[in-house]
Amino acid sequence: MCGWLRIMSAYMSSPDTPPPPSVPPPLDHAAVRPIIAGLMLAMFLSALEQTIVAPALAAIGRSLNDVENLAWVVTAYLLAATVATPLFGKLSDIYGRRAMMLIALAIFLIGSLACALAPTMGMLILARALQGFGGGGILPLAQTVIADILTPRERPLFQGYASVMFMTASILGPLAGGFLTDYLHWSFIFWINLPLGAVALLMTDRALKRIPRNDRPHTLDVLGAVVMVVAAVLLLLALSWGGVRYPWLSWPVLALFAASALMWLAFARRLATAPEPFIPLDLVREPLIALMVTAGFFSIGTIIGLSIVVPLYLELVLGFSASGGGIALIAYVVGTSFGSLWSGRLISRVTRYKRVPLGALPLTIATFLLLAWMPAGWSLPGICAVLAVNGFGVGTMYPVTTVVIQNAVEPHQFGVATGTLNFFRQLGGAIIVAVFAAILLGGLDSGEGARLMETLARHGAGEGARTARAAEFAPLFGWVFVCAAVFIAAAMVAVLLGEERPLRGPATTVKMKE
Image 1 (cartoon, helix red, strand yellow):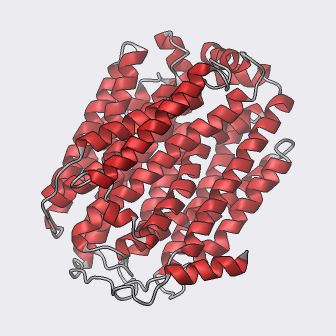
Image 2 (tube, one colour):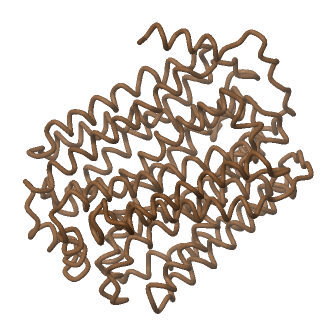
């Protein structure tokens, strides 16, 4: 097997590969720091909203008197963010990063206000989609600006900072959401975005005036975006309803899967025939970019999925209180942050940078398999140690995938390339969240998944933890961890097969503080 992988890796690394394009010189250090600071705050808000709503779902269901559609409060944001990432990336190549970042932040703030004021579940879901559309544009734009102002060898450190911000917000989101819901009101998880977003808007407006521009004319494939959304919604509906509302082999679920497959085929055909498709085929056909996109889909998608599932695991299986679960999540944040920063610093200094994720990802796979083998019975120090090691391994994937893709394209393609990467990251997150939920709810006895959701909505997560038996949920979470290990293994294979092109530019010398 290893020999076959080496042969494939050599095949992917053809000596005929053209030399990488040149990039404009970066800004001076004093100009870089305020730009990075504004981007970090904007990215924090975007990532926070992906998970902050999870602990508030019970209160939202009670307040709006709608339990059945609670999952779409999370899914609507993820799906809209998935659509937004390549669109904003391409638009920034047309109209500039600053203009599109300000528009993305404005849409995010309007969506946050609409969420806080939503009187019904349907209005909240629509508002979450609007919020997700704005939030989904922030992350690829921030990563693209980093590519605009730094050379490839300088980017890994700052992409590491960005990934730490993203992962910290993703994991701390449930803690903040639980606190605001318990002590104030669930609507405050949206109100809090308004003052923070206003500060981010002012900071980015001033800082981004100095970034270089590489504008090129583009057209938007609206039809391709619509077909992709329909295909994803049908798939998510099938995963959400299977085993909960309908049996897995019932005709409604099978019809949804079949319709989704047809729409994905239509989406693939559209990509092949559109003058300028929603996802540029000239990018994804390039072996290195295709492999890095695959690695991002599985690795970052798994992180997004676990940010929703792990709080439930800590409560339903291990029986931790909110504070105990919070400590375990902080351990995961520390692990992912250290892994991302360590890898960002290291790959900017070494030639064989693929060894960094290839050496760290086995740690993540091993800890997932350990949790699958023994999902119950962990003490707080024990689960903290396991989650920290797990996070360290997968944390290396944020800077690696972004830096490698940006190193392989022309400067005027930074926006669309970064948007494409984040499109597949978000799509992976939305699908993996649905897969994990299908395992948990579909694995219960007939109708018990719906009853569990109703119990959680009526009585809150604490009551759900007291009434659910840990012995019943432990094997279900075990299968979740098995799936997570398989996903990370797929990401590792994609990195292994990718070509290791030298990073351009000098070693990293820019620091946030001097």
